[in-house]
Length: 433
Image (cartoon, rainbow, N blue to C red; front, top):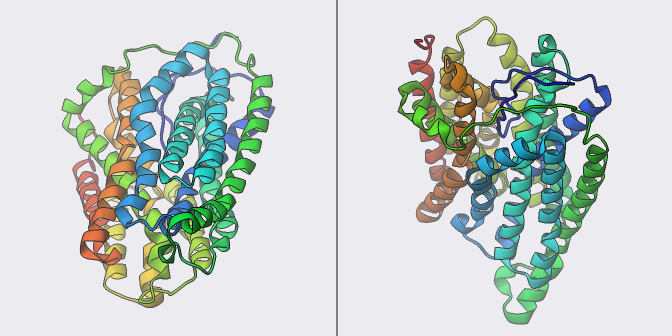
């Protein structure tokens, strides 16, 4: 059937851009789209488990370890707009298959990375994997809008986001058991030469096995989606210049909002990346690597719970004021964690996940308010701003190395949240036409 024009948007939280779409009745296809949200959310959060593993095996400092997130989120900068153009050219279903197969290739690249015990190859594998994630996200958001009537789009999108959060909650728990649970008693820091290479090769096999399992699952899902490649007969997608949205940055409200997306994603990823090492410190909770890895689920699970609570509050309260409130809460929790010890320090850091829950969609909607026909262009710029997940963690890791303190390094995410607080206050009133 014929489709109305659809805009392509992208976010790590599965938050859609503005779309004006028709719909198709394909109930079975909805389950596969939910699976896409679950998988790309889970794979992204799995980086939080890989970082401490690779840090130990390759005796990395925090700056070097954060290159994992840098390479992963650089894909949003380099692949986001080309990925959207690809989807516009080949359509949603074939675009989903292309993204899934790219993710599969990225998973399989962990095999040569392990065999050669080369950190750089692991980073390349993560970049390829993330490139596929970006394309799948470009597809999944508007596709949810297509698969049902307009009057129920919000409930479908909320349900899809819940699957995304479910993935970010479950994957770190499973990954912790599979990956961190296998760390050997010997330390890479005590080895050198061939013995060190062999140790790294042996220990990275658990990472390889985990990602081979993901590759198989991705291949199966890609095959199923391919079977539905012609399900959206007559689909049409809005075409515009890839760089059309950059002029919007001259609008103070939108430019400020795009900056806050950059800072929010960076702060969220920075904290998630440091959780394991932070909780392992004797001054905090003194946990083992696997036990600390299991705690990541509370960070991402808090975001999942907060989404449902926040969606109700946003119906009756000012979005700007709620955004300012949760940003202030995040700053307060960081200050509590950095200036305390034991379980108070640990759980206050994990509780920041609850504060993160509504930030991305609220910043997005406030920034894009009253853009009208330019909303699609705004979505494209927001996509590029997700690159903050590459930059801010790297800066946080560098500060941890320079100061010798993970608690002090939390100053950078705290500054990010403080700026988001200011945006919430700035955008508390409706935008002018």
